[in-house]
Image (tube, rainbow, N blue to C red; front, side, top):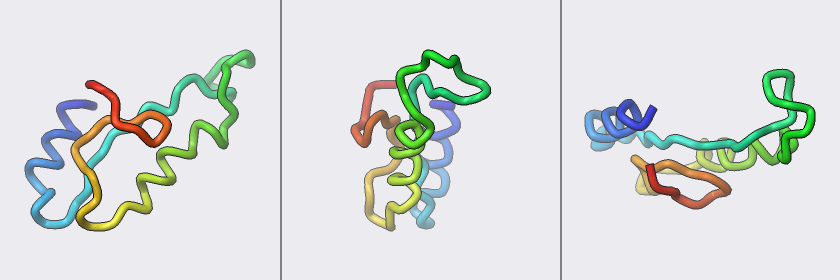
Length: 71
């Protein structure tokens, strides 16, 4: 995922593609555990926020809770 994000950003960033990766955390879903700490809404918050980025916004990063985190 990290390499794909960096590759997409490097290859297509100048054409306007914003490539970012996100870690939603452990979410209470059918795939997650019933005791996961995050609700589906909490897990979706950062991906939805990133999807609304416009040209010139940060790209090529890995995000958690609307903040970039180390790869």
